[in-house]
Image 1 (spheres, rainbow, N blue to C red):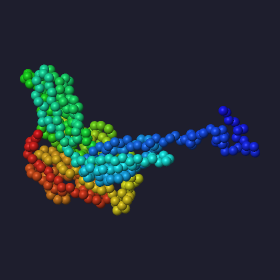
Image 2 (cartoon, helix red, strand yellow):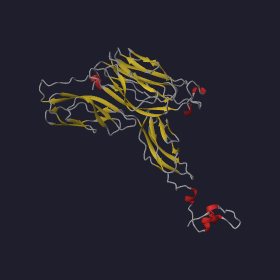
Image 3 (spheres, rainbow, N blue to C red):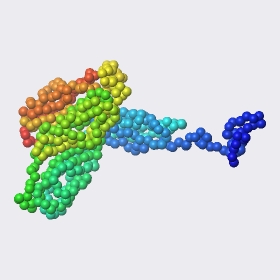
Image 4 (tube, one colour):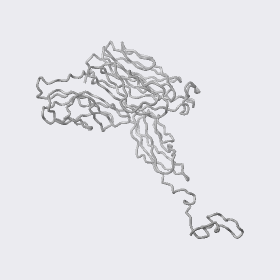
Length: 441
């Protein structure tokens, strides 16, 4: 049926109620959804099924996900308590650096912006664990036989299983394969002695990585076969000691020193994967510096390489949180907040991230870095009591301890760090200086 304007005229020549009156008069029904142009709402649901385990004193970042309803979504904590140091933003971002261990039952709620508004909830259990250092448990590779099948299983301890293994460098024969699960298998058909640097990566949050060098001897190899020189034992102890980076502020100067231990100094630092926050750069000598330009949470991996004749490397994954300028509750650069705080009367709580320092060896180069989180940069470090090993000095502006210890013994001392808002925290440390060669694995 075709409707024309004559159907809309009354006996008095006026239009009545528009087309709706005509449809109703004709007995034709019109759906409400069709009349107002809105489709039926999709049910709102929370898609995040569980939260990954967090590590105490390490930056945590997880974004809750929802589907259905109408964007944007608004998230909030409906019940329970988050670990101290973590916050849930309205965007669903669970961010911060937890300072409490334990299991925290929480319930989150999300609502959409539909009409009518939908709201759903889900309960989670968030575990914050003490960081268990990842270590390579395999002391050495078993000897191989020439032209015979070879198989060896690598093992690790600490961290969070499962582990993933990768051959980083070396001269293993192409006939030998290192599987991600940690099995070295194949057959060696060429005589010689082979060296490989292996990396093991755990499944924790944050991810830990450890590198170790191995020599593989082949039984039955002729005496004239080329032999790869062994890597010094000190190289086995080479590691990155900076476990985390303090958060930064957009449009504010940032500087965080990096430290490594063992091997042969000086160390050379490089970006191994992903990107630094825009505006920041990595100094090859070991520092992340610059002025970040964009807030966010940035994940990347840094690598340190020593200066030995057979260089060995260690890598460490980091997460660096850059908060917004004055809009994030922090004063804009050059502007003082009340009481030297964050615009709400107090600066973010200052706390020490580095809780222990590596031991060293007499007359051997030593380097370690201490890091903090929170507060307002720049920081200043001070030795308040005790004594560091003779031959070591601390850079007060960077929190780096460097030098070559000249005496044996156990040295205990307290380091205090202060920020630009007037907060101070201190930590007691103890460094054991042993004779060169002692404590080798």
